[in-house]
Length: 234
Image (tube, rainbow, N blue to C red; front, top):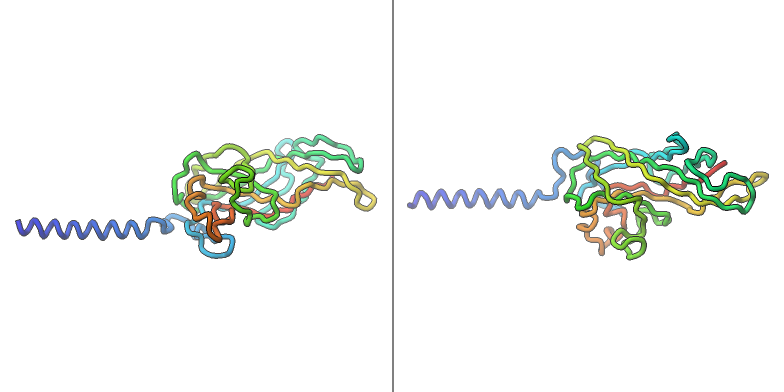
């Protein structure tokens, strides 16, 4: 009877140590995650959870799927030829006229970490023209908990292995006005900049969104490119 009690004691102790170890490593970066998944919040501190994705590039596609231009990071400048737009509701060059050019935008994502929390409906892909970029706030404007952003569409599944790439493609509109520039009349886009975001629909809500730096949208996303200056040219 005494031997059984001693055995039970050590088994209980072993289970207790194991449970403590699991609880302490619950949100450590798993060994299979890539080093870059230990990402930063928008203020440069270590993010509470690793980032699941990196955006490898964003390619804007014109008519027939032809590449009109590509960016590979934040704060880049790109001029899209209006002449090869997928669609354009004004094709003239008269000063003062307005139009909307349409391009497909292909976002190439790389999975760099396992999810900190399994998604509910899926991953949210969205954008903003707010010039604050990654430092836009969580407000009730523009989609409730999604903040000052627009979703490209419904949540999507991103079932890639770590290290694997996947493209997601959406349609994007660029309203413009034809304006005089020297001797030419050129299209001038309405929006000063565009930023793109990828959210895990559960992780984004698990982070402490009412405190700095997680009150900024860029700190709760799995990846983003911010403040791209995407303009049009003839």
